[in-house]
Each structure stands twice: as C-alpha cells, then as structure tokens.
Image (cartoon, rainbow, N blue to C red):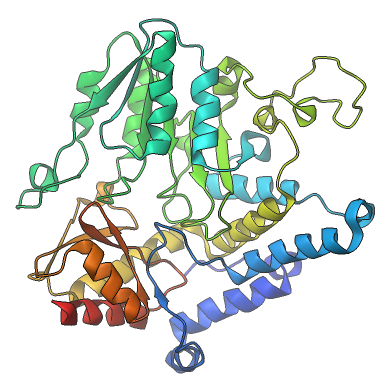
Length: 416
C-alpha cells in the first residue's frame, strides 16, 4: 500500500488525519471494520461515486470553515486569510503530475469545455471528432461550433456485444480504429470522455495521445468519470486539456470542477470571459491595461468560490495522500470482490479488457425488475447504486470496505 511521506502529517489537517487513519484501519483491522459498521449502521452503503458522491469529511470541514469565516468577519476575513486557490492548484497538479500554473478552477465540466470550445481558433471546414453517445457536457460545447462553420464528426457506438462478444446491447464504447477512421487532414480536435457514463467503458489515453501528437491534433478529454479513481497524467499522455467535476470520484462539493490545459493549447485559445481576476494587475481596479494572465488563470476571470476551492483542495489532499495508483488498485480489488459474489445469471456485467476498464461496473438486470426499479429497491435497503440508460452502475471507491460491496451484491441477488 502507498503511504504518505514523512512530512504529510505535519502538513495536513486533523480532520484528514482522522479520516486517513480510518481508511487504513478499515483495510487492515477487521475489528475496526466491525466497530465502524456498528457505529454507522444507519448510514447507507454508498456505491454511486459516478454520480453525486458523499463529501469527504475533511472536504466538508474545509467548506464549513470558509463559510464560518465569512459569516463571522465579512471583509475582515482577508486580514488573516489564506488563499484556498493555491492549495487547490497544488493538489490538482500533484494528482495530474503537472505544475500548478496549468490547473484552473471551474464550476463544472461544461464550463471548462465551453471555454475551450468557444475560444479555439476553428475555421470553416475544420473538424472535431467525438463519440455519438457522449454526456451532454462533452457534446453541446462542440455542437455549438457548427455555428461558425466547424463540423462535428461522430464515432458510432459499438455495443458491448460488438466490443467483447456476448449478447449485451445498448451503449458500449468504440475501438481505436473507429476514431482513426474519422480523422482527416481537417481534424483539429478529438474530444472524448475518458470513461463513458453509461457503460463504464474507458479508452486508452496514452495510445490516443500518441496518435494525436503524431497528427498534430489536440486531444481534449472529459474526465468527470475518472479523475480521482484512475491514473491520469496529461503531460505523459499528450493530452492538451482535461476538464472534470469535483463531486464524483473526487468526493467534493457540487458546483466545483478542475481543468488542466497545456501551455501550447492556451496559446491558441481566445479569451471568452473577462473580469478583474483575468488581469495581472488584479486588485488595481482602475488600471485598465489589457494584460491578461497566460497561465491557467487565463480561465479564472472573476471571483472564485472560496468555499468550493477549499473543499476540493481537501479532496485532492485525500487522494494524493492515499495515492492515485493505490486508489485505482483498490477500486479493482473491490470490483473483484463484488463480481465474485454477484449472480451473473441475474445481472449481466459489462466487462471490458484491462485497458478499457474504469471504476464503474454496469449491470444489466435479467430478472423482473428494470434498472430504475432495482435502484429504488436498493435505496430502500440503504444501498445507493446508480441506474442509468438501462444499466445498474456500481461504483465503489477507496473509502468503501470489502464488506460493503459484498453486502450490496447479496442484496442485489435477493431482489430478482
């Protein structure tokens, strides 16, 4: 297991130390697991980290601290205030293997991708390649660009049956060759979700990044369904930009997000939104010199959300302390426990090859209940799963225990 470095505990909050210790104890001490289960017997088993997650306690504490500070002091809060955006950028940079000057705060994935799409120097006839069953956040920003003469070229869905054999129809994913076949000399951008929100299919970032680099194409990735659960290193993988929400696998508050942009991409992007924070002179408000930031602050045009950045900074600290590689491994361990227990005659899992696996297992109910009905019945039993597009999505995370995923599988088995 990856453990924090020797300086970690000196730099981290008491709340997070408590939280991290509990994670360690749950994994290594069955007695502690049982005790926690007794203490939290009225709390739901939460397996919907691909939806709106429960906030980490440390993240909630950080948010409350910012709210309390403003409630008590108003503008006087700035006398002894520490800018949370600095910790946010440092934490996001560590998770992504980059530097803080490449990390921006955004409110959600849609805002980040819209800033990039609207600011990209597309000319009439230029092409953007994407997938036909994308989540709206990674579809409409590119669709809008048709208004200036660009063309959105869509890869057709391949079902799980086509990709992996078997009989499961519906949203699946695509093959690398499907993307390659859509690329022409006019292709400027490939815009894809790392993980498909319906099926859990993940494309190979490294292979796609190498392909884009060889063709001088910008790879822009929606990582809402992967950041915080899978290893993502944009500079190693030749990714031009990443946008992600903070309330899924990062377990931060709703209405927060993060965006990575490479320096080369930022040079291309036209400024869309402008305000005081865009300018180098900052609080010198009567100085109207046009002098915008050229690092990731280029997209942070006005007053940011102090509460959200504080909370998401704490979420980054949690993920970095546990280690993203270990988080990914732990997710697969929990998936294996679940799959060994679930009755695969009653629930057909969409299982992809190793390079296409994510933190999501999507199940097709084969019994009398459809996915929505299964989700409702599980909620009654205090187990939170995620029905979507005919699938029941199971999304365990490093904060879950073996016992929780086994209990969820047993409850599903009893439903049919």
